[in-house]
Every structure is written in C-alpha cells, then in structure tokens.
Image (cartoon, rainbow, N blue to C red; front, side, top):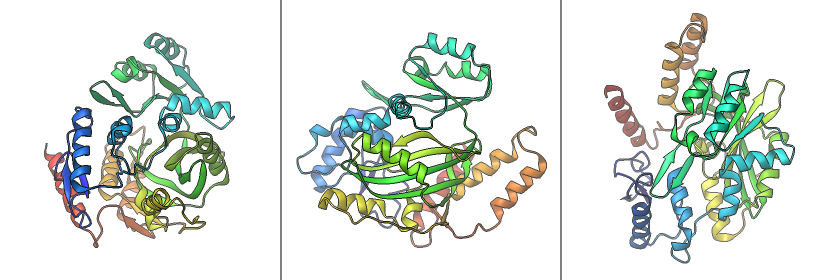
Length: 364
C-alpha cells in the first residue's frame, strides 16, 4: 500500500500499488498527519512502515513511541539519527575524526553570520542549514543549501528564516564530481555497500542527479562512511554523499539517514536495498552482497530536460555556444547501458502521471 497527501501520486500510479491512502500534510499539519498514519496502520493492519520523504520520516520518528507494538519502523534510535541528520554535529564529528571535509564555519546567530561573511575573501561559498527539514511546534520548515557567488548573494541568503533563526554552516565550495556511497547497516556493522557517481545534475552547478552511473566502491569513501556509521551505531540504510575533488580527495557533503533519490539505480545494479532492509529487520540477518553491476546508468528524463533548459538559457560567461551545443548532443544521443528512472514499459503509468504534471506546471 502507498499513501500521500492526495490519491493522485507518482507512486500511487504504479501497477504495484494495490491500495492508496491519503493523509494530512506533514509540513503544515504534522499532528494530523501522524493521526492519519495511525488510522491507516490500524485499518490496513500494517506491520512494516516505511516513510520515504524527509518530512514524513521526521514526524513519524518524533512520535515513534506512539506507534503500535510490533510495528516495524526500520530506523535507528533518535540519538543515532541526530548524529547524521544534524549536519553541524556530523561535520564536527568528521573533523574530530580527521576525515576530509570542506573548510567550515559554524554559525549560531545572525550577527555571527554577518561578521563571517564580511571577512570572506574567496567565493563561491556554501551556506548549509543544520537540517534539511526543521520540525518546529506546528510545522516543518524546508531548507535549501545556497551556493553564494558573491558577498551580496551570501547576505541575501541570510534573509531566509532558517538562516536567521537556526544554526548553519558556511563552507568552502568544493569543485568536483558528486558521488555517493549507499549502505545497509545492522547495529553498527555493514551488510552491503553500493556506489554511484553523478554524470549530470540539476541545476548544473550541483543538485539532484538526472543521470548517474554505478561505480566500484572507493576504498577511501568506504572507510569514511564506515567510520561515521559505526560511530553512530547505525541500524538501517544511509546514503553518504561526497564531492570528489580534482586531486581525488572525497570530501564529505552530508549523510541521508533514509532512502535516496537514486535508489532505483542500486536495484537495477543488483542491490535491492528495500528487500534487504525488510529482511534485516524482520529476520535479523542478511547475507552480505559483495558485488553488483558496475557501469549501469539511470536517467531521470524530465529532470534531464530541465537541466538542458537551464544550460541553454544560461549567460555566455557560464557556457559558450560550443559548450551548449555539446550539452544538447549529450542529451539527444544514446548513453550506453541506460535505464530510465520513471518511464519504464513494464510500469508506464507513473511516467504518464509525471508527464501530465510536468506539462501542467509549464502552463502555470
């Protein structure tokens, strides 16, 4: 069964979604959302609950002691999650363990932020909120990482509520390729690893992956990930995100203590994390997976189209005409062993749903 804020959803459009449920928004009505979840769990006799978005995950974890006895919620305890989800704490831990991180300033007040920005001489810099979603009394505040290319852009970012009222970091910008290491852990011990690299992102300067590729697990990234996840006594899945600089150094960017956007790539490559996670929590053991298909690609078609549009409309100082033409050719030409994230013949209705929404958004 799948559930969301309406019956018309991407996951609900799948042929594999036998039933659909509706709940209140976890963003604006977290208490009503959790009440709806309890109702669905009771009516459908759910025994394995898997929140996927950050908002739904945070609200359910905040209220996990109110869940029915025997219901499996495949997440670590609150303190372990805070080790990873709180980016300020995560980077302080990484630095104490002498792991490669961008140069970081920890900001606790707007006055400290203004003073820090006044003394920055090299741009771009990255303003990173301490959490991606901030759960306050009656709502969830969504945050965004800001790449500031000038002092003016950095000062403009401080107008956002989550920079004015909550801790955050100012970090040096790492130029390089985005790579991720995915892992399944049981009580601090690894059961399997998977790795990918981002070939194209939206926006092009860095963001969500629109074309990615499975790659061999890098020993340095594995060591960093294992060190942090073991330290947190992690239990469940996690994605450790890196920027790999030109000299090959993998710099820690963040850790997502839940399923990630490119999950389908791991499944296509032979590591079925959802199935393994279920077995881990239901049966207590999983046979380790030592290998997977390397070089498997996955493309989010409509996201890739958006990326192309951003490149083509960008000013000349960012992309020359030759570079824009090259990006157009890359978009149009086949890309090797590539599968699509949404538009699949075996389950085509989600793509129809996504395409209709995409076209509606263009007209609005």
